[in-house]
Amino acid sequence: MIDLPFIDPKQMEDIHYGLFITFGRALYVAQHFEANCRALATLLDVKGAHRSGKISPSNENPDFNVFIDKLRKRMLAQNIGRLVNHYMPADLKDFLFPILDEARIARNYIAHNLTPGCKTLALEPELQEGLIEEIRKLVRRIAEADKHICCIMQAVTHEPIPTGEYLQGYQEEIASWVCEPGETS
View (tube, rainbow, N blue to C red):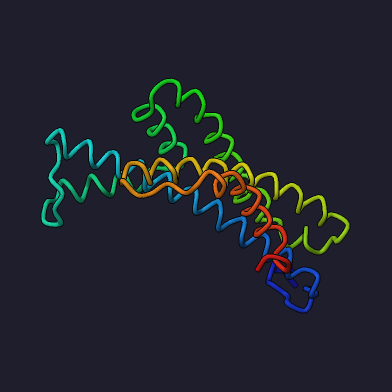
């Protein structure tokens, strides 16, 4: 008989649910950052193409639709590269690129390394505390980068930027929401 890797809910105990909530929330934060990078890069590319007369936004314009599809298919690293290399002054680029790149690496680690093995990790309670601390560090990196991207997007779209007090505690608030689901939900 072949031992297929089916999900067996009977193997899961209540203690595992908090960890699965943590994984889900970590993935949400990672996806939020990726979506914001894509949205900002796309917005700036569309504005630039429209201003230069290269493209006219219209659903009936097939060139515009091809252009948008191409932008949507860009990967996170491509969007980060586009943002820092085409739209940021050198001093901001020098400050922001390392933050964005560390967040990209953290996002990839959560999505491709931690999450696929979450069932095995959840079944070993002695690993959970260290795992949650690792997730907390990764989420802080992602939240810091996402905070910067969100502020830039707010400025570009002429929306109000949150107060310094709100922004100062942002990373820790997000990390607590992810890693302490029973305490902050």
